[in-house]
Length: 202
Image 1 (cartoon, rainbow, N blue to C red):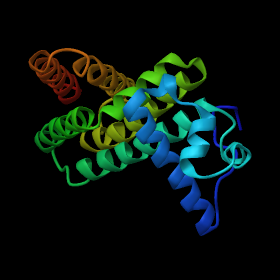
Image 2: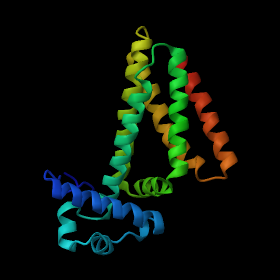
Image 3: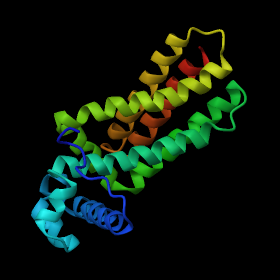
Image 4: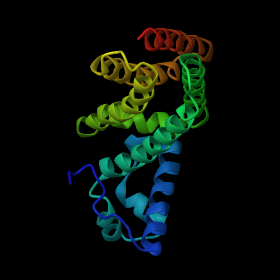
């Protein structure tokens, strides 16, 4: 385990509830003041536990951000898997992929804390590798569907394209929510067109 990860994976109900409370309070604190202002002592106080108890779960702030980001990642992977589950043709694929991007963008717009969590990930060198790993996992989900639809295409080409599309998608979302809404909407639409064009041309 590295220092950006949770120290203790709870197995009992009480421990899971405490972990949920820690992360819920961390989310609220980040939403109000940003991740830079997150302090472990304040998080422990807000959760109603000692700082020692908090450190049993998380060694530092980076580990808290890692856990929050991983929860977002898990929800994202589940959304992608569900969105692609009924795809039976490239036409279906294009529609489903476009809908996934719209959903993801809507989440970013509706939940400002997600933006701050990902900003914190970008600012922390130890956490940036997590973003690449997540792009690989999401790319693998996308690639698996494309390989089923395009069995004659070189699998390595599909994997490379799927990875790039998913990684650029994350970057597009961060850019889109950093500019005026109209420009952000246009950026997302441009990304969708480019991504769908490249994916369906395989």
